[in-house]
Amino acid sequence: MELRHLQHFVAVAEDQHFTRAAERLLVSQSGLSASIRALERELRAPLFVRTTRRVTLTEAGRALLGEAQRVLAQVRSAHEAVAAVQGVLRGTLSLGAEQCIAGVPVAGLLAAFRRRHPDVEIRLRQAGSGELAEEVAAGRLDLAFAYRTQADTDQLRSVSLAGEPMTVLCHPAHRLAADGAVLTPHDLADEVFVDFHPDWGPRRVTDAVFAAAGVRRTVPLEVNDVHGLLDLIDENLGIAVVPRHFRHKRAALTSLPLKDAGGTEYETIALLPPAQATSPAARALMGLLETGSA
Image 1: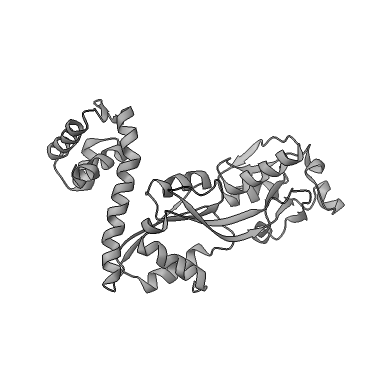
Image 2 (image 1 turned 120 degrees about the vertical axis):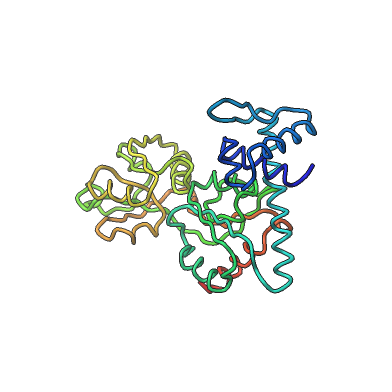
């Protein structure tokens, strides 16, 4: 099995189109098709279902995709490791992050990294913590800053970075702001909630807090960005339970402490592949973070 066959297979799987994949790889479409056919012959299984508009993965193709991505990520890491030994960090740093992650100044960290390693191409992707964990485990991301969603595995390890309690955010005219009391999940049982998509770290923490307290809640106002959440609260359309640092993003809102959270807090972690598979670029970025050089 040749690496170029795996590279061609992954490109077609990602683009779901032979022509677009060929253009991205700078190869002829006939050559790309021949490469895929050779891989299918070797594996004795069709990898794609082809139509006039797009291609989709077969069951065999889906089984191969994750393994192929991990193999290519390891090959890339090997090339970058050799370059690092020679004193020059090159290649690509593919980073994932949730929005407004606690304790990690992502923009400043990447700026410091670029100053030290100008030959490394930086790629950044925002997504929810569950998706980011899958991307790192599959080798599509070098590392990610996220909320802990699972225990470490043989394909994924975590490094704890920061932790903080959850707080209630509401409009100053809301009745909770007038009371100014320390709140429990039971005090919030009948409130209208603004919250993130269930894949986001803050939502996972809040869901866990209410589940532990045995309090059922509904989320009629669901958003995928921090400022959208704050805007809805600012219009007094609902309240939110969020990590404490969110209160600094909109000073006009009222922040109230939440107790009886069962010891649950928002924990920021770095998600990385196993140590032997971690790229030199990822190690360099973690080094900057650990030394406070951002």
